Amino acid sequence: MARKQGSHSDITGPKVQQTALRLIAQHGFAAVSMRQIAAEVGVQAGALYNYTSDKQTLLFDLMRDHMVALLAAWEAEAKPDDPVARLDHFTRFHIRFHLPRADQVFVAYMELRNLTPENFAKVEALRRQYEDRLEDILRDGTAAGVFAMQDSRVTTRALIAMLTGLINWYRSDGRIETARIEAIYGDLVRKAVAV
Image (cartoon, rainbow, N blue to C red; front, side):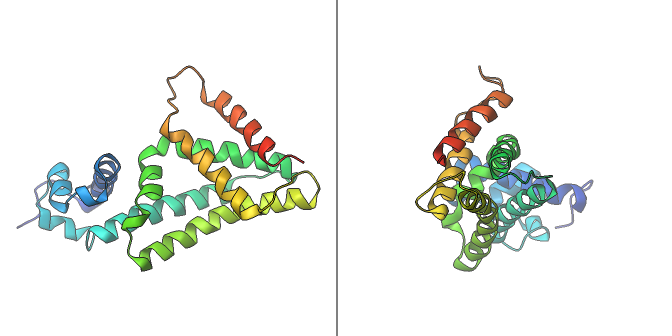
């Protein structure tokens, strides 16, 4: 079937990604069909294959793109040298980056089980790169005598899980503004690694 009149790849491609992301976050990867995505985008199911080779690739692309954007955003940050200040900076950055991206975060963390082993390894490598940024801060703080922990890798993963879990309950229109949440979580993170 011919391309739908008014359909443009620079518009439809991102719309396919946004729609797939929303549907997967709402219903889960296994419950969402390519036909359902196509219907919501407003194209024939076969037209989706102009934008992705299959549903697995679409899921992988969503996860990879989230992690690449996260890493790029962190690398662009001006970071303090002091480990305590850098830990606070990381905490605030993680919260600010993730709160407006609840669907991306949900898919990136909850749908890993649906990746093929090859795709899982690629996404896991990106996740490890991000975890390494925090672990480096924790190790620097330990070397400086300002942090103490039994295992830096376990502590890294626990802190990231705590920070990421914020998207499950926090609402920007709730009783606590985002800046206050950042301060509270900063305090929790510092106490978790305090000497």
